[in-house]
Length: 100
Image (cartoon, rainbow, N blue to C red; front, side):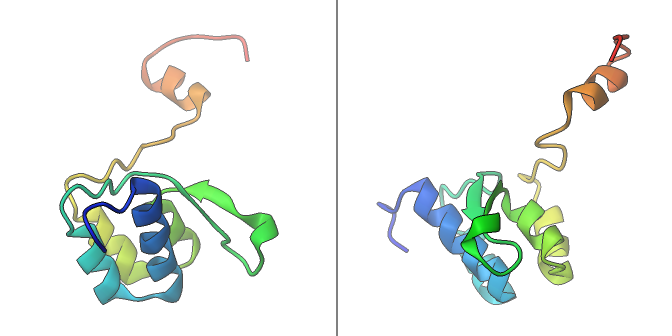
């Protein structure tokens, strides 16, 4: 992958490697300079493009049951585990009270 490859393209390639269960490729791709390991990309989690979802590499690996890749990503200090928390959860963690 060249340095001129866009983040969207990098994310797509990482997600495809995750879907294939290619741990070595994921390690190589995530190790490239400038790669955003928290970037969202579209990937089909089941079998067709109709169920494609915008997910991070960690979300994709977890949804696809790629345990070794999940462990690898969680060990990366750049990974944001709580990247997309629901608003209600954030409110509760911050002690805010609402009438939901």
